[in-house]
Length: 301
Image 1 (spheres, rainbow, N blue to C red):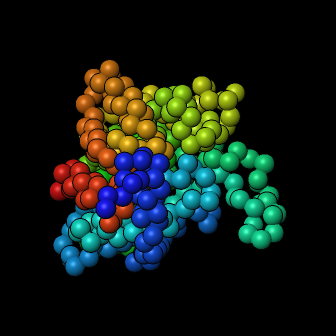
Image 2 (image 1 turned 90 degrees about the vertical axis):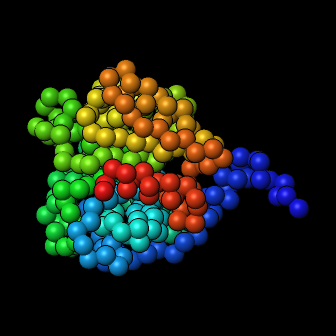
């Protein structure tokens, strides 16, 4: 008998989310710090069964830049890529303040800060991690070829992946600006929060985007330094993979970013997967995850 909820997007979204979070955490082969804060670490996964030099995939997890969501939920995806022959770097970064301690109701000392993201710390960490990666990966995963790097990220992590590839077009005077384009093979952004203004219009992640930039009074001032849609063209090969039935980050956000790129004279690849929501893109049990791996492979090899 057909599942009566199979065509209900809310029911399907719940099932997809449950599947993505059903996998056990996969321990890394090495964890290396790129700074002094406990969140300034990178988990490295060596390519499974491959001792040749292989591309490095750098992954940024999502979770609306909020502290309660860390890199652990992305470890099955990192392991999936390692089993496909890639070296993988799963980056942690500082996010919004912590939630009340379990069982006590006592908030952490910085709980009065915005709930999503930290300005400038979230961006400090992404920049520092990317700058440190070539040296760190050489020691942690000798098979990784730091000359062949593809950056990917999911949801809020997709935003960070796009931002990391656009640092050379940040406004003059930005502390994160690079003098030259980063040496990347490309970026594959997965259901990214890629156009901050459009995402705010659609109320994506319930106010997290405005919080990331420090509140409504700082949003327009800081958006030129934080919004991938405002940092175009980059000259970096970029692809976006998006589920058509995504209820968390609607496909309209990805389309707005692709349109902004076109207006800037740049072509961004957009793969829209029908009947796919937010989490199958990082779920090793889902067909969509294999599509993501193929998109990465096309840029990396």
